[in-house]
Image (tube, rainbow, N blue to C red; front, side, top):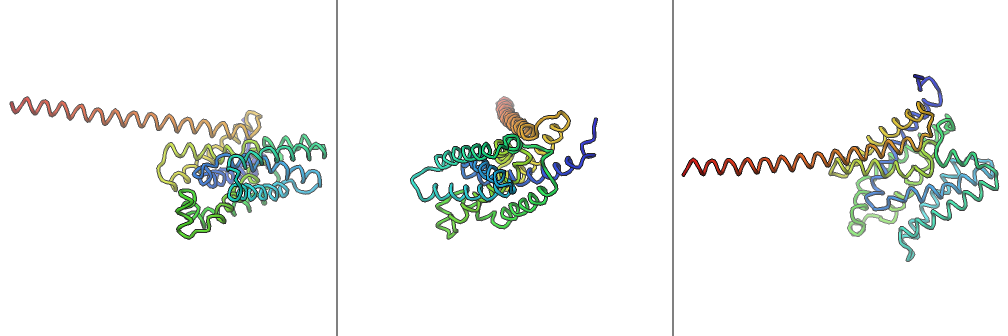
Length: 292
């Protein structure tokens, strides 16, 4: 068996996988709580246009994706808050516009092969320079979660209550959207733009099966995210598979395991209660017989 850590690109990819595993579920917990689970998908499609611009102008596709996806995230919030357009319709508009713009610009540039690596991820395309940029962005995302976690939690629980409490709800909503855009850019080189949203949602859904409080759900989701990213990365290396689908399938397997764990645990709990009830009934009957 080949040692994956004998290769420089695998050591870089492993660090990247840990960063993605921590950041994507961390911001994903807020997104799921706000019932905007497809926000990452919408931003990922918008980022395609940024990549197309980067390839067309021979500049950094990562920087182009960061700028365009951030503007797209702001546009989603403005459409959602100030127009008669619902959140799902705003996301759909960005889906179509981002995908069309990205494919058009990439075709004009002639970089169809390069686009493929951004759509589904590519371990070998990650460079040391990418890692520095992604590490700085990941620190920024985690700092936002730590510094504004309480305010973001109140916003996600009930926007009206948060507004009545004096919180700047519009600014906080923009903060969540922009942070999600940055997270998409962080993860796009390893997982791919079409699959990055899965790592923002699936670990959170798995953690919700096992935990009850918001904080414990976030921490469990981050642990599941890291486990999914590292396991999927190593599996893709050993079997010569694309990393994005491998990571997402591992996350889905962990979700199914969490669902089964909860179902079995709930069944055992009910059986235990039923058993105690039956024993209590039998004991009561026996006591009644003794006292006759």
